[in-house]
Image (cartoon, rainbow, N blue to C red; front, side, top):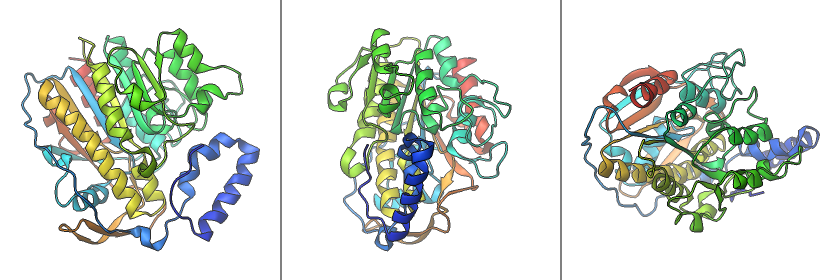
Amino acid sequence: MFTFNRRKNKKAMTKNLIFLIISLFTGTALFAQDSYMDADAEPDEKIYVGGEAYNVESFTDDFESDNPKNIILLIGDGMGVSQVTAGLTANKGKLFLNNFRHMGLVQTQSSDKYITDSAAGGTAISTGVKTYNGAIGVDADTTVVKTILEQAEEKGLATGLVSTSSITHATPASFISHQKSRNLYENIAADFLKTDFDVIIGGGVEHFTKREDGRNLIEELEDKGYKVEPDLEKARYIRSAKLVSLTADVHNPRISERGDMLPVATETAINILDNNQNGFFLMVEGSQIDWGGHAASTIYIVEDMLDFDQSVGKALKFAAKNKETLVVVTADHETGGMALTGGDMKTGMVKADYPLGGHTGVMVPVFAFGPGADEFTGIMDNTDIYKKMNQLLIQK
């Protein structure tokens, strides 16, 4: 199991000890998956002092038709407007997100709570249906609802999921699984065998191999013809095979350890999916922007916001050349109530405070680039993201 490279104060250590004791009675997988929510930042983590900015290319939003052949959906988990502004400041005034000319705001409430969790938020985006917090791919009555990924498969499109979390975690799971609880990780992993996806890249190998039912889902995937390559440095050169790259036991670690895993995984997935002449659907999640919000860590948020933005850049570079690809960037919710209390565009310094350790109910941004981008403007509900994608890609 990977651990995050950050200092924890005594309060966080006490919380984690209590959570560990509880996990002994409820199963260690729950602790492994959700321990990031129990972390607190040291005071100096609330200030990102600045660093070297990366180069941001400009792309022309020039497309050949009104309907996309491909959709790349990128979800910055926990990414509100403050998180975007923090990234913009840290990179000294420019992000790949600056390329987007069509933008809107998204309401995020779930069916049972004003404050959504990632499971309900992800399900709303993947299915167009509101559901209760904790639900994966089912409605409020636990009835299975087909996802945009499954509909794309049925239409003959290639499909893929990429995440810096475990691939069985709430957001990626909501695009491929149907379970009454997000905590049923082994059930979620088994649902991957019920689909015909083309690429998955993320953590979570333990839920495929160290299972109570004794199944080895990795071997079953190999029997189905998948190329299984956990080393992303090797997987990135795979261009034609159907790929499973589970890169961590549970979650991938922080960026100081995982490096450019997300941009590389995004590009790798696109290269494979683009082989399908009918088109493709790809969901990419920058999971750990959310974790930085839970930890009240500006450093963590900025690191992962910039990492996510560079993954957006990979999608934009492909879309600008391909001219048949819609790129949509949004979030499932905001985390931490991030309040920017200082910054410097010249040095990249960002200072923030956090009234909450959890999610908030504020609207989140949506950005769109490519054919159909003009549909993603104004104030909309999170279920509208699915409805617009469905209309453009599936119903066309």
